[in-house]
Each structure stands twice: as structure tokens, then as C-alpha cells.
Length: 109
Image 1: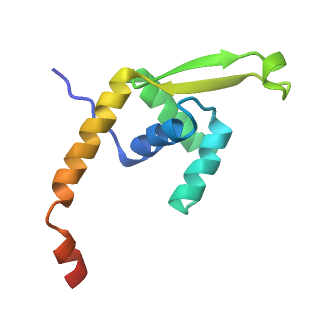
Image 2: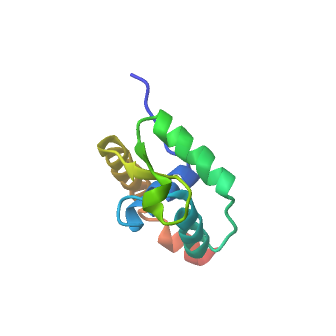
């Protein structure tokens, strides 16, 4: 069985979708990512990550018609799939195991 992994940025994108009430389009995602990470995030990087996540089955998307968005433009909204939630939880548990016991070493550095 091929194991799907999550890169750091992919994790951040998934967490951002969850922070934005579980469904979001790219512009608020970029803003949230920049505010929380303290670094500049390009919209293109978010699109690429979202496409990769969708190909892995970790997010799903839907288009909303221009008439309903209030902007005159169609928007693609993304939602984390149940498989994406499972992988996020696994990723967090893995990172928690790695962080266990290293706090003291960080203080010494």
C-alpha cells in the first residue's frame, strides 16, 4: 500500500481550511497563512498545494457561480475530506512523538 505523506505547507493549507470554518477559497487562505506564519505566501503556491491535495483525495472542491459570490467571479471552495482529516491527525501524532522529550535540549541550545 502506498502511504500518502503530507509536506509542511500541505499541512498548513489543510489546517487553514479548517480554521476558516471548514470551507474556503484561496484569497482568505493566503491571508490566514500569512498572518499565522509571519511570512509571505503566494497565491500560486496555495493553488499548487490545493491541486496536489485534491489529487491525493485530501480535499474536495466545488465551484460557486459568479452571481452568488457577489464579486462577479466564480470561486472554487475547498473542504478537507475525511481522509484528509485522518492524515492530519496521524501527522500531528507523529510530530508530537518527535517533540516528546526534546524541550530540555532546545533550552540548552
